[in-house]
Length: 516
Image (tube, rainbow, N blue to C red; front, side, top):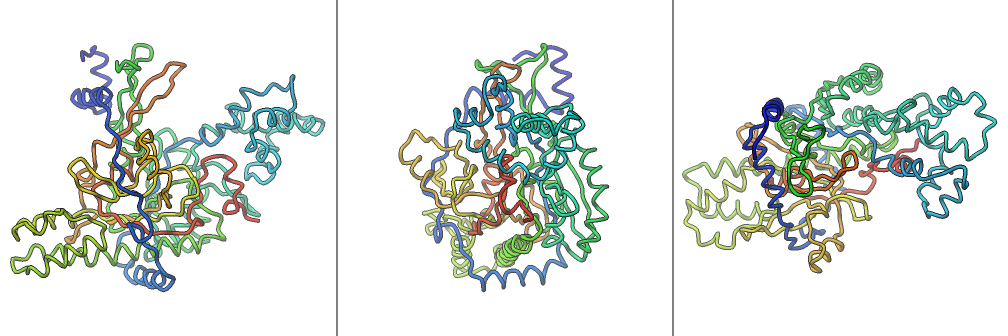
């Protein structure tokens, strides 16, 4: 690939090397194969179920120890809310008020979601704000008929000249309507952190956001911080970071040639997997990872916190034993029985499938093998029962080298043209709500370099459109997929109440987002 002088300057300005770009081009030409599912993880086969007694004990364990730990709540919050309003954008582009009523449009196209949106419109947290705006736009608002009001409502919340919600970060949209104020998802994460990530009166939160949205987040924080601190009796240390430009990828056309706009190379963000670099910069003993849109109104916070603290307690309890064994493996006096005990711990507690030839290894090779397995970051992940929600799930995966490991796998990673693979995928009992507690330090208190534990071959190639032209782009191994592929993994069943994402605007109508 040859580059023009302007190409060279642009690539260098992103902090990328030509080797990086050429490697990206190779990825397009030789895309990764699908993962090989061995089986889905189920209760008793990769997924734990905790009793109430165990949950209470783990919560107590966490509460007793967190005062001596550094705890951070890490929240990916980069995206704008455009996908959330996809249904309404389609409605605006297709509906012609001169030819039909809104009800006839809905019936003709069988869009029950749109019908639900309109009949419950007053329950939306931004309803009142939109009406105020509509009265400014249309002084004769009260004289409009129902269809005119509904159409104006959609235009008001979406158009750039008005509320422009689909271009606002999802974390800053009105999410919950309380008696005296409207709360955003960003604000709800502060209240949530106070419940389980507060140590000695202080909660540390980190949000990954788009650089263009920094001032908006800072402005919102300035407006709410004192109030939330007063209500929670907690001080907040809040920082922000952006997806690094060095993780951007070169887009290509359908013939795998560099895609250009106005003769300039097009580089794009490479998905949430790029955030492993941001996570790698967090200095903490425990990191809670949760998406920006997965929040609840305050009356459900105690139950959410209960399970978060239990998972954190399980992480600490598992780490305690893992650290003791990691230390023992460094001793010259370790016995054969201890080696066998450590291998059993890895199998039973960390879900690591020991190599079938392990028993034939010489002792020194057994020790090195166990060191390589136990000296890894640990993640405890909540898993909810499958209710056909979009997203990845827990599976046992067989790798090219014959090893089997527990992974979170997205549907797009599976070859559904193979009957057995499709059957494993569709019959999965649980899915991933992105409820993850991370232990990112070793037994010596040293931080792992998380980039050493990525499966680089689990990147995605996706097709998108830019200004009417089709292009291909790369997404790096997902943050909780390939980017954590070589972590030690514990899956725990958690109740569906802990999973409340807002992927579509109508999700705000669910009971966990409604005060009444």
